[in-house]
Image (tube, rainbow, N blue to C red; front, side):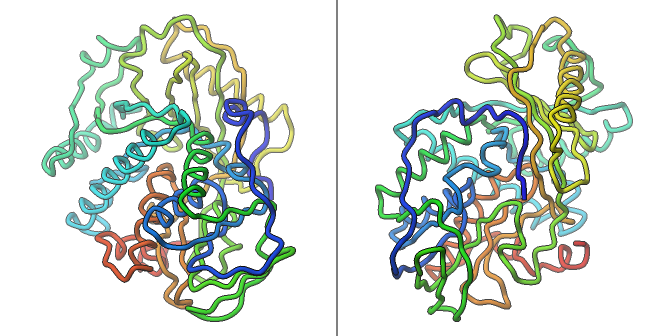
Length: 408
């Protein structure tokens, strides 16, 4: 399956990086991680830093899948608002989940700031604006709930928005504690740090089969074999690779562009990250060298478009949308792509142990907060392996009732 088509920006920012051998032996370890993208690298890093012997296998090369098309926005707010989660899973659980996302963002910040290679991590605020006047009451309700539970947020009315940006919107929430990152460099940096801490990484090593039971699994690859007590599936938007009955994702595709560097971004207030209440939504951020990254136009089709002209058509639509917001800018497209994207029916990721297959774990961070969810998953899986409780494991467990009843 194609995970992306078009021209990708992030790999061009790190032309030289560490590579890893293919597995050509039989080894034994505590845990084997299947997948070398964002989720796999975060799991490998967390397990290695926690002293848990682990092996990571990637069928291609590290960060070559969906990580290369990740647009690098780190936000604790979700595609589904806190107030919506509160209606579905209860206010206490919803707040606990949002707080865990906020804490996960801080853990990512700690890692990014500790890596020797620059991951272009920068703390930012986010402007979540009402796409139309009808969305303002729901957005205001969300703001009130966030503030009531201690989240750092402000309400901006139309006058405040228009005084800082060249566009007018009827209302917006400004959240603090978010960030932007170069996901490709971040994943490679984590992989290197994890490898230096004991994680064994094997590229060009596909999982062919698994057998056994908890504590005694055998994973066969092209030219090797791994014996492990635990298996972690960090397989991104190929959920069928993980097996089991619980992962029934809604898979689609999305689009993104990266512009050429602009002379000035003075009219882009404090480099805020932008997104909106419409679904599907437009989102945008800046880069350290004054580029714009703009994404959206999600479509309910799993396979990315294959024709260059189809990517170009959507890219021009994204460019037109950002020009509506910033008519004074004159951006030109340098990179554009279409990529697979996945969500769950209830807006939550699938993280944790499969109840039907003890010792087999999912780290599938589906949704707009995939990097944040990856960190949550890594912590939940680490805690499970160590026999410790995790405060949000029950909310995102694979067999939660809402996801099981709504997924296709």
